[in-house]
Image (cartoon, rainbow, N blue to C red; front, top):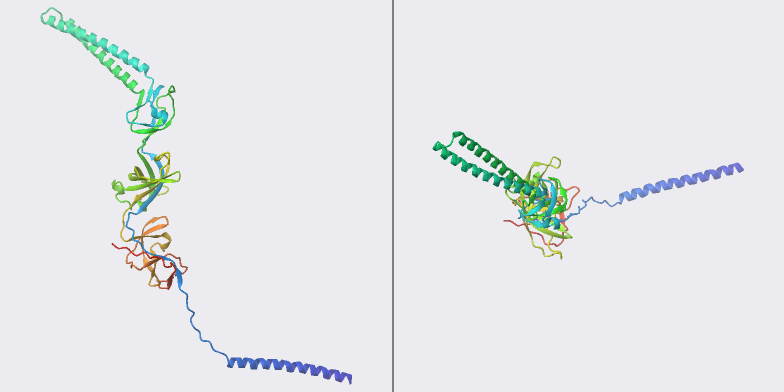
Length: 402
Protein backbone atom coordinates (compact mmCIF):
# COMPACT_ATOMS: atom_id res chain seq x y z
CA UNK A 1 0.00 0.00 0.00
CA UNK A 2 2.85 2.36 0.81
CA UNK A 3 4.54 1.68 -2.51
CA UNK A 4 1.31 2.47 -4.37
CA UNK A 5 0.96 5.82 -2.62
CA UNK A 6 4.61 6.74 -3.36
CA UNK A 7 4.18 5.92 -7.06
CA UNK A 8 0.96 7.94 -7.26
CA UNK A 9 2.63 11.01 -5.70
CA UNK A 10 5.55 10.88 -8.16
CA UNK A 11 3.17 10.63 -11.12
CA UNK A 12 1.13 13.61 -9.89
CA UNK A 13 4.34 15.82 -9.64
CA UNK A 14 5.53 14.89 -13.12
CA UNK A 15 2.12 15.61 -14.53
CA UNK A 16 2.16 19.03 -12.83
CA UNK A 17 5.46 20.08 -14.45
CA UNK A 18 4.31 18.82 -17.83
CA UNK A 19 1.20 20.95 -17.56
CA UNK A 20 3.31 23.98 -16.50
CA UNK A 21 5.65 23.53 -19.46
CA UNK A 22 2.80 23.23 -21.91
CA UNK A 23 1.21 26.37 -20.44
CA UNK A 24 4.45 28.37 -20.84
CA UNK A 25 4.94 27.28 -24.44
CA UNK A 26 1.34 27.98 -25.29
CA UNK A 27 1.39 31.37 -23.61
CA UNK A 28 4.57 32.37 -25.50
CA UNK A 29 3.07 31.32 -28.80
CA UNK A 30 -0.15 33.22 -28.16
CA UNK A 31 1.84 36.30 -27.08
CA UNK A 32 4.10 36.22 -30.19
CA UNK A 33 1.04 35.83 -32.40
CA UNK A 34 -0.66 38.78 -30.74
CA UNK A 35 2.33 41.04 -31.04
CA UNK A 36 2.84 40.07 -34.65
CA UNK A 37 -0.75 40.89 -35.52
CA UNK A 38 -0.69 44.24 -33.69
CA UNK A 39 2.83 45.48 -34.55
CA UNK A 40 3.40 49.00 -35.93
CA UNK A 41 5.20 48.94 -39.31
CA UNK A 42 7.91 51.66 -39.66
CA UNK A 43 8.62 52.86 -43.16
CA UNK A 44 12.32 53.31 -44.16
CA UNK A 45 13.33 56.94 -44.73
CA UNK A 46 16.78 58.16 -46.00
CA UNK A 47 18.87 59.77 -43.26
CA UNK A 48 19.85 63.36 -44.09
CA UNK A 49 23.58 63.73 -44.77
CA UNK A 50 25.18 66.65 -42.87
CA UNK A 51 26.91 69.37 -44.87
CA UNK A 52 30.72 69.20 -45.02
CA UNK A 53 32.30 72.06 -43.11
CA UNK A 54 35.19 73.79 -44.89
CA UNK A 55 37.30 76.91 -44.51
CA UNK A 56 37.74 79.12 -47.54
CA UNK A 57 39.56 82.23 -48.64
CA UNK A 58 39.24 84.70 -51.46
CA UNK A 59 41.45 85.08 -54.52
CA UNK A 60 43.75 88.06 -55.00
CA UNK A 61 45.34 88.63 -58.36
CA UNK A 62 49.15 88.83 -58.06
CA UNK A 63 50.29 92.01 -59.80
CA UNK A 64 53.96 92.17 -58.87
CA UNK A 65 57.21 90.42 -59.87
CA UNK A 66 57.52 86.85 -58.66
CA UNK A 67 59.95 86.57 -55.70
CA UNK A 68 62.92 84.33 -56.48
CA UNK A 69 64.61 83.70 -53.14
CA UNK A 70 68.12 82.64 -52.25
CA UNK A 71 70.54 82.71 -49.33
CA UNK A 72 74.27 83.21 -49.06
CA UNK A 73 77.10 84.98 -47.29
CA UNK A 74 78.45 88.45 -47.98
CA UNK A 75 81.88 88.48 -49.60
CA UNK A 76 84.02 91.16 -51.30
CA UNK A 77 84.10 91.52 -55.05
CA UNK A 78 87.89 91.16 -54.90
CA UNK A 79 90.25 89.94 -52.15
CA UNK A 80 94.03 90.28 -52.66
CA UNK A 81 97.08 89.19 -50.65
CA UNK A 82 99.57 92.04 -50.37
CA UNK A 83 103.16 90.83 -50.93
CA UNK A 84 106.43 92.26 -52.28
CA UNK A 85 108.04 90.72 -55.38
CA UNK A 86 111.40 90.72 -53.61
CA UNK A 87 112.27 90.05 -49.99
CA UNK A 88 113.81 92.32 -47.41
CA UNK A 89 113.13 94.25 -44.23
CA UNK A 90 109.86 96.19 -43.94
CA UNK A 91 110.59 99.86 -43.28
CA UNK A 92 107.09 101.38 -43.70
CA UNK A 93 103.43 100.33 -43.65
CA UNK A 94 100.38 102.32 -44.68
CA UNK A 95 98.31 103.47 -41.66
CA UNK A 96 95.37 101.52 -43.06
CA UNK A 97 97.28 98.26 -42.53
CA UNK A 98 98.01 99.10 -38.91
CA UNK A 99 94.51 100.43 -38.16
CA UNK A 100 92.55 98.09 -40.49
CA UNK A 101 91.39 101.19 -42.30
CA UNK A 102 90.74 102.30 -45.85
CA UNK A 103 93.09 103.39 -48.63
CA UNK A 104 92.94 104.74 -52.15
CA UNK A 105 94.20 103.27 -55.38
CA UNK A 106 97.90 104.02 -55.84
CA UNK A 107 98.68 104.54 -52.14
CA UNK A 108 101.93 102.96 -50.92
CA UNK A 109 100.87 100.10 -48.67
CA UNK A 110 104.27 98.49 -47.94
CA UNK A 111 107.86 99.66 -48.39
CA UNK A 112 110.79 97.25 -48.20
CA UNK A 113 114.32 98.47 -47.43
CA UNK A 114 115.84 99.50 -50.79
CA UNK A 115 119.25 100.85 -49.65
CA UNK A 116 121.20 98.46 -51.84
CA UNK A 117 119.08 99.26 -54.89
CA UNK A 118 119.47 103.02 -54.36
CA UNK A 119 123.25 102.60 -54.08
CA UNK A 120 123.29 100.66 -57.34
CA UNK A 121 121.27 103.43 -58.98
CA UNK A 122 123.77 106.11 -57.87
CA UNK A 123 126.67 103.97 -59.05
CA UNK A 124 124.99 103.41 -62.43
CA UNK A 125 124.33 107.13 -62.83
CA UNK A 126 127.97 107.95 -62.08
CA UNK A 127 129.20 105.34 -64.57
CA UNK A 128 126.82 106.70 -67.19
CA UNK A 129 128.09 110.24 -66.66
CA UNK A 130 131.73 109.12 -67.04
CA UNK A 131 130.94 107.12 -70.14
CA UNK A 132 129.02 110.00 -71.72
CA UNK A 133 132.01 112.31 -71.10
CA UNK A 134 134.37 109.79 -72.70
CA UNK A 135 131.97 109.43 -75.65
CA UNK A 136 131.96 113.20 -76.14
CA UNK A 137 135.78 113.22 -76.17
CA UNK A 138 135.94 110.39 -78.71
CA UNK A 139 133.41 112.19 -80.95
CA UNK A 140 135.57 115.38 -80.84
CA UNK A 141 138.72 113.43 -81.66
CA UNK A 142 136.92 111.66 -84.49
CA UNK A 143 135.73 114.91 -86.06
CA UNK A 144 139.29 116.34 -85.90
CA UNK A 145 140.80 113.19 -87.41
CA UNK A 146 138.26 113.16 -90.25
CA UNK A 147 139.04 116.84 -90.98
CA UNK A 148 142.80 116.11 -91.10
CA UNK A 149 142.16 113.04 -93.25
CA UNK A 150 140.39 115.19 -95.83
CA UNK A 151 143.58 117.31 -96.06
CA UNK A 152 145.76 114.16 -96.09
CA UNK A 153 147.22 115.23 -92.73
CA UNK A 154 146.06 112.06 -90.94
CA UNK A 155 145.93 108.40 -91.90
CA UNK A 156 142.77 106.35 -92.43
CA UNK A 157 143.82 103.94 -89.69
CA UNK A 158 143.60 106.76 -87.15
CA UNK A 159 140.06 107.51 -88.24
CA UNK A 160 139.10 103.82 -88.13
CA UNK A 161 140.56 103.47 -84.65
CA UNK A 162 138.50 106.38 -83.36
CA UNK A 163 135.37 104.95 -85.02
CA UNK A 164 135.91 101.67 -83.14
CA UNK A 165 136.39 103.51 -79.85
CA UNK A 166 133.14 105.44 -80.41
CA UNK A 167 131.15 102.27 -81.07
CA UNK A 168 132.66 100.56 -78.01
CA UNK A 169 131.92 103.49 -75.71
CA UNK A 170 128.34 103.74 -77.11
CA UNK A 171 127.75 100.05 -76.37
CA UNK A 172 129.09 100.46 -72.83
CA UNK A 173 126.78 103.43 -72.35
CA UNK A 174 123.71 101.42 -73.42
CA UNK A 175 124.66 98.62 -71.04
CA UNK A 176 125.04 101.07 -68.15
CA UNK A 177 121.68 102.66 -68.92
CA UNK A 178 120.08 99.19 -68.96
CA UNK A 179 121.71 98.50 -65.60
CA UNK A 180 120.24 101.75 -64.29
CA UNK A 181 116.75 100.73 -65.48
CA UNK A 182 117.15 97.33 -63.80
CA UNK A 183 118.15 98.99 -60.52
CA UNK A 184 115.18 101.37 -60.72
CA UNK A 185 112.82 98.43 -61.32
CA UNK A 186 114.36 96.58 -58.37
CA UNK A 187 113.80 99.66 -56.20
CA UNK A 188 110.20 99.99 -57.41
CA UNK A 189 109.61 96.33 -56.50
CA UNK A 190 110.45 97.26 -52.92
CA UNK A 191 107.27 99.39 -52.89
CA UNK A 192 103.77 97.85 -52.97
CA UNK A 193 101.00 100.16 -54.14
CA UNK A 194 97.23 99.67 -53.72
CA UNK A 195 95.69 98.20 -56.89
CA UNK A 196 92.21 99.56 -56.06
CA UNK A 197 90.22 101.53 -53.51
CA UNK A 198 89.56 99.30 -50.52
CA UNK A 199 90.26 98.37 -46.93
CA UNK A 200 92.51 96.04 -44.98
CA UNK A 201 91.07 92.76 -43.75
CA UNK A 202 94.09 91.30 -41.94
CA UNK A 203 97.77 92.01 -41.20
CA UNK A 204 100.52 89.37 -41.17
CA UNK A 205 103.74 91.36 -40.68
CA UNK A 206 105.04 94.40 -38.82
CA UNK A 207 107.61 97.11 -39.49
CA UNK A 208 111.07 95.63 -39.00
CA UNK A 209 110.11 92.10 -40.03
CA UNK A 210 112.23 90.48 -42.74
CA UNK A 211 109.96 88.85 -45.32
CA UNK A 212 110.65 86.66 -48.31
CA UNK A 213 109.55 87.63 -51.78
CA UNK A 214 105.92 86.67 -52.41
CA UNK A 215 105.05 86.10 -48.73
CA UNK A 216 101.80 87.69 -47.53
CA UNK A 217 102.11 90.91 -45.57
CA UNK A 218 98.41 91.84 -45.41
CA UNK A 219 95.09 91.03 -47.03
CA UNK A 220 92.96 93.72 -48.64
CA UNK A 221 89.48 93.77 -50.17
CA UNK A 222 87.08 96.01 -52.07
CA UNK A 223 85.23 97.65 -49.21
CA UNK A 224 82.58 99.36 -51.35
CA UNK A 225 82.00 96.40 -53.65
CA UNK A 226 80.30 93.58 -51.77
CA UNK A 227 78.29 90.72 -53.22
CA UNK A 228 76.34 87.58 -52.33
CA UNK A 229 76.37 84.29 -54.24
CA UNK A 230 73.09 82.35 -54.17
CA UNK A 231 71.96 79.03 -55.64
CA UNK A 232 68.92 79.20 -57.94
CA UNK A 233 66.95 76.23 -59.23
CA UNK A 234 66.57 75.76 -62.96
CA UNK A 235 62.79 76.25 -62.69
CA UNK A 236 63.38 79.59 -60.94
CA UNK A 237 66.16 80.76 -63.26
CA UNK A 238 63.81 80.76 -66.28
CA UNK A 239 61.52 83.19 -64.42
CA UNK A 240 64.17 85.95 -64.18
CA UNK A 241 63.91 88.31 -67.19
CA UNK A 242 67.09 88.53 -69.30
CA UNK A 243 69.14 86.40 -66.89
CA UNK A 244 71.16 84.75 -69.67
CA UNK A 245 71.28 87.88 -71.83
CA UNK A 246 73.30 90.04 -69.44
CA UNK A 247 70.42 92.18 -68.19
CA UNK A 248 70.99 93.30 -64.56
CA UNK A 249 67.95 91.81 -62.80
CA UNK A 250 67.09 93.89 -59.69
CA UNK A 251 67.19 92.26 -56.26
CA UNK A 252 66.82 93.05 -52.56
CA UNK A 253 69.41 91.89 -50.02
CA UNK A 254 68.46 91.66 -46.33
CA UNK A 255 71.12 91.26 -43.64
CA UNK A 256 70.32 90.78 -39.96
CA UNK A 257 72.62 92.47 -37.48
CA UNK A 258 72.01 92.57 -33.72
CA UNK A 259 68.36 91.68 -34.18
CA UNK A 260 67.75 94.39 -36.79
CA UNK A 261 67.33 93.75 -40.50
CA UNK A 262 69.20 96.09 -42.84
CA UNK A 263 68.26 96.17 -46.52
CA UNK A 264 70.36 96.89 -49.62
CA UNK A 265 69.27 97.16 -53.21
CA UNK A 266 71.23 94.97 -55.59
CA UNK A 267 71.37 93.38 -59.00
CA UNK A 268 72.64 90.21 -60.63
CA UNK A 269 76.12 90.77 -62.06
CA UNK A 270 77.48 87.28 -62.74
CA UNK A 271 76.22 83.78 -63.49
CA UNK A 272 78.24 80.61 -63.07
CA UNK A 273 78.51 78.91 -66.49
CA UNK A 274 78.05 75.43 -64.98
CA UNK A 275 75.34 73.74 -62.93
CA UNK A 276 76.29 72.36 -59.53
CA UNK A 277 76.77 68.60 -60.09
CA UNK A 278 75.13 67.66 -56.74
CA UNK A 279 72.27 70.12 -56.32
CA UNK A 280 71.69 70.92 -60.03
CA UNK A 281 71.40 74.60 -59.17
CA UNK A 282 72.85 77.67 -60.85
CA UNK A 283 75.17 79.89 -58.81
CA UNK A 284 74.26 83.54 -59.30
CA UNK A 285 76.13 86.53 -57.87
CA UNK A 286 74.21 89.58 -56.66
CA UNK A 287 76.14 92.83 -56.13
CA UNK A 288 75.07 95.17 -53.32
CA UNK A 289 74.32 98.71 -54.44
CA UNK A 290 72.61 101.29 -52.26
CA UNK A 291 71.67 100.79 -48.62
CA UNK A 292 68.08 101.67 -47.85
CA UNK A 293 67.34 104.06 -45.01
CA UNK A 294 66.27 102.47 -41.74
CA UNK A 295 64.20 104.03 -38.97
CA UNK A 296 66.25 102.20 -36.35
CA UNK A 297 69.95 102.94 -36.06
CA UNK A 298 72.50 101.78 -33.52
CA UNK A 299 74.52 104.01 -31.25
CA UNK A 300 77.58 102.74 -33.10
CA UNK A 301 76.15 104.01 -36.38
CA UNK A 302 74.92 102.20 -39.48
CA UNK A 303 76.68 98.84 -39.81
CA UNK A 304 78.23 98.03 -43.20
CA UNK A 305 77.67 94.83 -45.12
CA UNK A 306 80.15 92.79 -43.08
CA UNK A 307 82.13 90.00 -44.66
CA UNK A 308 80.63 86.54 -43.98
CA UNK A 309 77.32 88.06 -42.81
CA UNK A 310 74.33 85.84 -43.65
CA UNK A 311 72.10 87.44 -46.27
CA UNK A 312 68.67 86.69 -47.71
CA UNK A 313 68.18 87.69 -51.33
CA UNK A 314 64.96 88.23 -53.27
CA UNK A 315 65.38 88.58 -57.04
CA UNK A 316 62.53 90.11 -59.04
CA UNK A 317 61.09 87.61 -61.50
CA UNK A 318 58.51 88.03 -64.25
CA UNK A 319 55.02 89.47 -63.75
CA UNK A 320 52.75 86.68 -65.08
CA UNK A 321 49.12 87.23 -66.05
CA UNK A 322 46.11 85.64 -64.32
CA UNK A 323 48.33 84.45 -61.47
CA UNK A 324 47.24 84.09 -57.86
CA UNK A 325 49.16 83.44 -54.66
CA UNK A 326 47.63 80.55 -52.71
CA UNK A 327 48.81 78.33 -49.84
CA UNK A 328 50.92 75.47 -51.19
CA UNK A 329 48.61 72.96 -49.47
CA UNK A 330 45.63 74.30 -51.46
CA UNK A 331 47.07 73.04 -54.77
CA UNK A 332 45.71 69.50 -55.18
CA UNK A 333 47.52 66.86 -57.25
CA UNK A 334 49.81 69.56 -58.61
CA UNK A 335 47.30 70.95 -61.13
CA UNK A 336 43.91 71.39 -59.41
CA UNK A 337 42.29 73.70 -56.88
CA UNK A 338 39.02 73.17 -55.01
CA UNK A 339 36.46 75.93 -55.36
CA UNK A 340 33.55 76.77 -53.09
CA UNK A 341 31.02 77.56 -55.80
CA UNK A 342 27.28 77.92 -55.12
CA UNK A 343 27.72 76.01 -51.82
CA UNK A 344 29.20 73.05 -53.63
CA UNK A 345 32.66 71.60 -54.27
CA UNK A 346 34.06 72.21 -57.75
CA UNK A 347 37.37 70.93 -59.13
CA UNK A 348 39.09 73.61 -61.20
CA UNK A 349 42.36 73.33 -63.20
CA UNK A 350 45.35 75.43 -62.14
CA UNK A 351 48.84 75.71 -63.67
CA UNK A 352 51.70 76.02 -61.19
CA UNK A 353 54.02 78.91 -62.05
CA UNK A 354 56.32 79.23 -59.04
CA UNK A 355 56.68 77.76 -55.55
CA UNK A 356 57.85 80.09 -52.80
CA UNK A 357 57.96 77.99 -49.63
CA UNK A 358 54.44 77.82 -48.18
CA UNK A 359 53.07 79.98 -51.01
CA UNK A 360 52.47 78.75 -54.53
CA UNK A 361 51.76 81.01 -57.49
CA UNK A 362 49.29 79.46 -59.92
CA UNK A 363 47.72 80.58 -63.18
CA UNK A 364 43.92 80.11 -63.07
CA UNK A 365 41.50 80.99 -65.86
CA UNK A 366 37.71 81.30 -65.76
CA UNK A 367 37.26 82.36 -62.14
CA UNK A 368 34.12 84.19 -61.08
CA UNK A 369 34.23 87.09 -58.60
CA UNK A 370 32.25 85.10 -56.03
CA UNK A 371 34.39 81.94 -56.21
CA UNK A 372 36.22 80.96 -53.04
CA UNK A 373 39.27 78.75 -52.53
CA UNK A 374 38.75 75.70 -50.31
CA UNK A 375 41.56 75.44 -47.77
CA UNK A 376 40.33 72.41 -45.82
CA UNK A 377 41.62 68.96 -46.75
CA UNK A 378 38.80 66.44 -47.32
CA UNK A 379 39.23 62.70 -46.85
CA UNK A 380 37.07 61.63 -49.80
CA UNK A 381 36.19 64.69 -51.88
CA UNK A 382 33.44 64.36 -54.47
CA UNK A 383 32.78 67.06 -56.99
CA UNK A 384 29.36 68.57 -56.46
CA UNK A 385 29.02 67.65 -52.79
CA UNK A 386 27.39 70.23 -50.56
CA UNK A 387 29.74 72.36 -48.48
CA UNK A 388 29.26 74.89 -45.75
CA UNK A 389 31.74 77.71 -45.32
CA UNK A 390 32.78 78.17 -41.69
CA UNK A 391 35.03 81.14 -42.35
CA UNK A 392 32.49 83.27 -40.46
CA UNK A 393 31.47 86.74 -41.40
CA UNK A 394 34.94 87.69 -42.51
CA UNK A 395 35.19 90.15 -45.35
CA UNK A 396 35.62 88.13 -48.52
CA UNK A 397 38.30 89.25 -50.94
CA UNK A 398 36.96 90.07 -54.36
CA UNK A 399 38.78 89.11 -57.53
CA UNK A 400 40.66 91.94 -59.17
CA UNK A 401 40.61 92.02 -62.96
CA UNK A 402 42.53 94.28 -65.26
